Structure formats: C-alpha cells, structure tokens
Length: 194
Image 1 (spheres, helix red, strand yellow):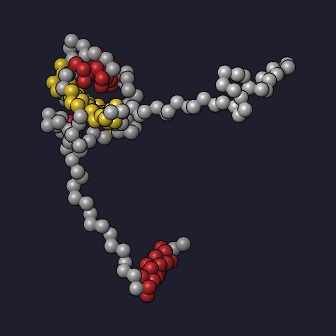
Image 2: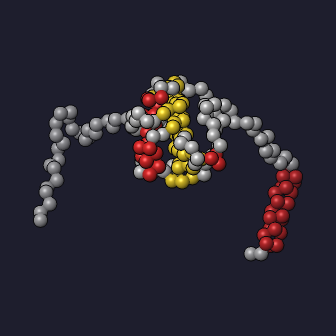
Image 3: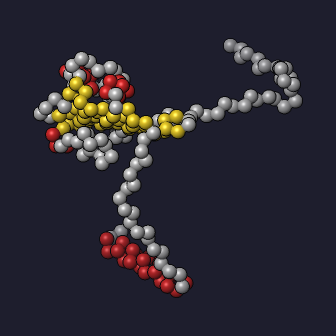
C-alpha cells in the first residue's frame, strides 16, 4: 500500500468518526489535561544508614578493610505483611578486591549500560557526572553500578519489590463417602509390570 493511499484512508476514517459524533449529537471525547510532575514517593517506613549493614545487604558480603564507605542508605516500605518495596544507595571508594569482585568477576551478572543521571528522589550525596562513569546494570534496570573512569569511586544503587506472601495452605482433600481417619474404599493402583 502506498503512502498516499494510507494518508487518504486515515483522513477519510478521521472524517467519518467526526461526522458520526456530529450527526449523533454527541460531543467528541475530551482528553484529560496532562498530569503535572510525578507525585513524590511516599516516605519509607524505615531508613537504615549503617554503612556496613547497607553494604552487606547490597553486595552480599562484608566490606574489606580497604573498602571506604563514604555514604550508605537503605529505604524500606513495609506493612503488617512485611517489606513491600526497598531501595539502597552507596558511595564507596572500593578496594582492588571489591573492584575485581564487582567488575571483572561480574558477581551480579550485569551488562554494560548507559550511565543515567541520579534520580530526583535519591539522597543528596548520590550525585555524579554521568559522563565520568562507566555503568554496569541489570536488564530490568534494578541494579546499577557506576565506576569512576578517572578516579577510584563507585556509586551503586538497586531497588526491588520485597517478598510476596506465599499461597495459602491447601485444605486437605477428603474423598466423598469416606470417614475421617480411614483409608478410601478403593485399592491403590497396581504396580506396572516390566
């Protein structure tokens, strides 16, 4: 189909829709006004700024003596059923061992990705110039590690949805006509013969 044919079909279709609304006496639908800026996220129910604890939950290991944690923050949103959402932020002068673990060994199976600017809701100390950093990130964009190109600096962040409640326990199935505590009236299946 040529571009001209497609343009004619689109124009005729739009005119037909407008004509229908005018003929039927209905008003054309009005699109809602564009929303303003995104609302600020709800405040977390818990904030943890213990550098060692945040580092350990982020990287699943304790920091080495040579790892200098400059800033750390973990935020959690929870209710009576547990944690519903979490996020953490770290600024670290990493040791050679941590750099090897995160970058060379690629402990979290991250791929090179474009460095993004820090989000507006991140802590004030979590600011960097994207062009000065090399980024490894997850395919879902949940975890990002920004390695300084010219200076030994690591900014790291991740977020997730918490743990979901498991399915409720299944009620025991009692065969019809059987009495509790008794075996069913049918015999078990016979074993297969070789």
